[in-house]
Image 1 (spheres, rainbow, N blue to C red):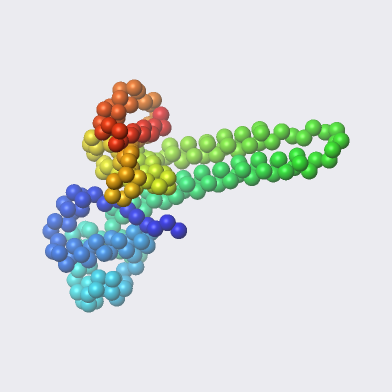
Image 2: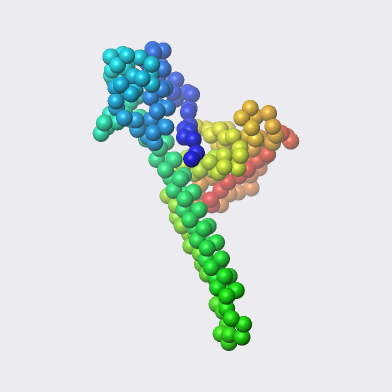
Length: 239
């Protein structure tokens, strides 16, 4: 099972938590981590959360009230939540759904191809009937899989597509940094071969999730920001 992780935008966090004391901020970050570890919500249990914050229950209750007053946490159905964590949890579910759909479709295509080939091998010699060609069935399964994946991708927003692209690069062994929404200087994702960024090449990624095709000018703009042999570019487009 993959370890949970989530994006953190330093400027947004600093602005949102500027009014907190060091004690309040420590409690906030601990609870946010617990929310993500538990899939988007953590049980609103005073003793449990006080234990994680290494404080007395009455201290935690004071901190909880303060964080709710600052609209950094909210309570729902016996759990504590955070609006940004809600969005992150939804994006994670979308990524997992897309990955599962791709896996199921790939498995279906392989299973159909394997079954049909095995059936052909078992056909008695001298049988007058011509065995059905398995290739059309495999092609049909692949087409159905592609259609399902494309339909799911079409439901994703631009930033969700950016996160999905980063997740695929992570699955290939890269360490990724995702640019927050807004002006990104031409780089949506920076993918590194290691956590320190000491290895090369670094991959600068542009993600365009739209129906319009990509033009040469956009490719040239990405090439223009690459730092020589140390960096390479990757342009991902659904158009």
